[in-house]
Length: 333
Image (cartoon, rainbow, N blue to C red; front, top):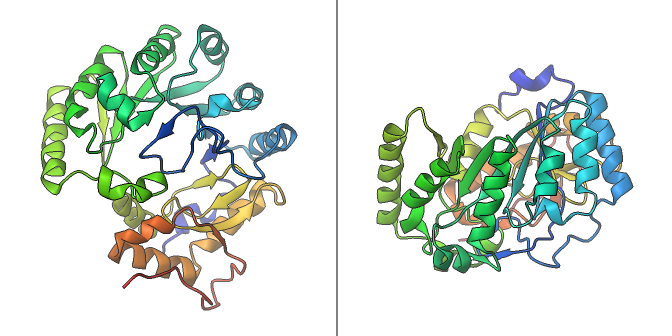
């Protein structure tokens, strides 16, 4: 049984990861959300709906929100939401590919309580970066990082290893240090979304992962005090195991307002369009006691290929933990 005692007394989450859109200005081969140019999800929240949800976040006292996508800067009302949250003392994190960072953007954001802007640098040469982040220019991402740092906004760098770029991981860490980032994030390739469809092409051989981990451990010692290297848990399955023992006080909100139980699982448990944040939070707590969710999580730990189902969302229509599940995830033989 999942232990939710540590979050049961909370009236709202401590953190909301809000995916604003599936639209993006790049077509990344490893994208876990299947985002790409023109790929906005049908029924994504409109501006007035997004602002209503932002107001609900503020009224519920949620202290910390991550705005992500897709590419959040492609959303016309992104700044409206960011300013509304920030001006009401909600701390912000923004995930971006860095292609749309301009002096005007950072001038607005530096006035808000932004805990960090996280920029993806999947390579230290245009060859590797462009092969994986199709349509992206590495120099634009670097310039975006410099603008963020110059504005006094904390900078994080993220690196998603694949066969195209794993050999440049160490160089990207050194680049992150030179750009003034305080944190470098990485982990094993997630078999979700676009990455799942191209997994055989993207997944490096096992010995490359062994060498990559050795490099991370070595750089962690070398750069102690200069930058934080975040790579634990290393796999999404390890993260799910942690969630099974103690679910995080976090809500993952999809672009159309549905709330996911957990990133690697396909279940949604609430809808911010139709329910208050308090109701969504209570549905999340109940979902972690649902036999359907628990069985699916255990199946996934045994069969990692089931991660391919993560974006095939299924609503948990009955959130009573006392009832047995009526259907299970597709299990491959």
